[in-house]
Image (cartoon, rainbow, N blue to C red; front, side, top):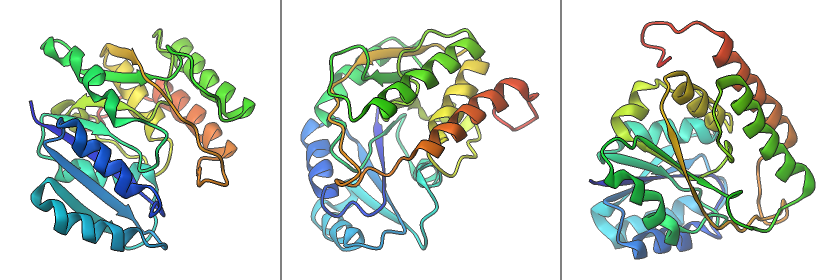
Length: 235
């Protein structure tokens, strides 16, 4: 199966080249689709050089202005040509060397979705609020949908491309994680989890998610649990 790695990038000039180098080093990516989400630093210039260097394997798309992580992922998804889509953040919190573990469950044709869980292995914590906020989101998802996932908000999500497109994702921001989880669980799709390593960065290092994003994520989980599915709405 061909793997499409989608990398949403906003002001990540300091790390995006190293992330792409590590993704390429895995030998797993059939293509890397990087979406520059209106960066105002040197990210576009870094990506232009990488696209020239790595040819058709690395494709770069651009948003004229910053629209959010969810919007960038949707742009990447529309361009992806692989059988599987893996979302890779452009910072260095998640390690591409974990790809073999993330992809292993797909040897079973029944597998549709794999989440890399930061909570199935001992990992550093960025801060009290961020860690427990993530655990709370998992608890909310499990209570609403009867699931047993340990890391709803993980940045490592791998989904069969056809299924991901059927979900008709609408999110613009960080609530992407909550929307995809809600729509998958509403469909009764089993989410397989594998343990991953995690190196959280601080706000000073460029971490962008904020406390209000957690509130939006909770509301997104609740909203999709309560709303009725409409034709073409991806349930």
